[in-house]
Length: 348
Image (cartoon, rainbow, N blue to C red; front, top):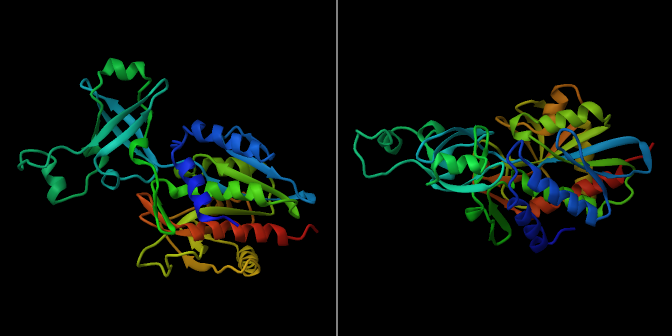
């Protein structure tokens, strides 16, 4: 369904669009352009979700497939006199994962690039950063962003408390490793690429299919909760990453993962059975997993009673919430399975 070169290019384009939680206008504009080029009815709702509708033969029934478009980052807390900016986390970020390097501050009027800094290494116990070299991980409280701008220059750019910080575009471009893609923010730009593929290839499903690029997932699935509170659904399926770790029996490669349970609850067994059948119909294999320290649009919406049936289809990923690595085949196979699922649904 998706050739790797084209899939890589789509994900690369999405990764290079900054979209920290709550400041997602850059990717919103591109998604509206892409849905429009496909001739698909699409809009931005009041919660900042980007939604496309594929009409079904039975418009009285609807399902939704979500992929959150926001990425993790940080929030500006204070601005010092010498252009040093202090930030605190936005979503599940850790400064030691990013390391020292270029970050972008998304000002109201201008983006200012700076250097996430931890201080010099050639120091003694008299310098506070010595502890980070020997005893403890770097925390946001120990780091700062060096901009070499004056406080006045930052103010003119619209840098203020609450300004979002993300990894700089200077070092954000994905890398191809044979059949794998390595990049920041595969969580969840790669899943948004799957939504675009479904918008292109899914035609006349049995029921209405909402393709939802959801907002502010990393800070509480806010966009998905807003959407599911207002739109009755037969089922909700979230597209996600799935962490590769020794504690989980998940293999790296082209086989997607169907979650049985995560940190928010147990997924619907009947819906999972339908997705396994769809995978078999598409001649694809899925892995099953129970994981913790994780939640999705689907599990959170089901926990709060917004949907009765929810599932999460994911692709195995190394270095989650860091410089992530995933097999392009697993990403493409998620699209193939969901296409088969939508086509095999009954319109009764």
